[in-house]
Amino acid sequence: MFRVIKYARVQRISADVRNLKENRRNAGHSKWANIKHTKAAKDAQKSTTFQKMSRLIRLAIQGKYCCRKFRQSVY
Image (cartoon, rainbow, N blue to C red; front, side, top):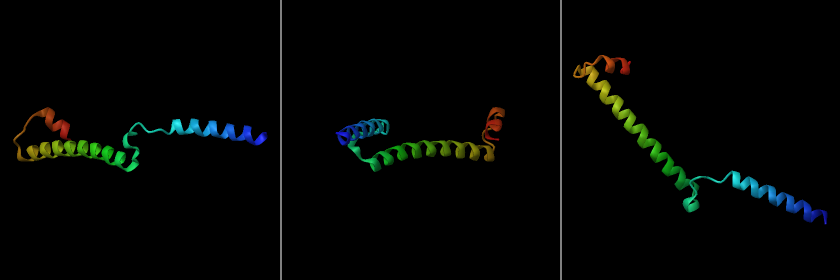
């Protein structure tokens, strides 16, 4: 009888832990596919940021964009 109670308690606790660890992106249940999609979104965001900054720096070096606010934002 003691074994049954002990087993039921462990099972209930493990079910609670499983619910806490549940991932938001659970579609397809593939961990690596979810990581790939998340990484692709973050990489795209980084890429656009670096493109904007490199364009602004290039324009500042060429002297084609001479705004005081721009110079302060670059430095």
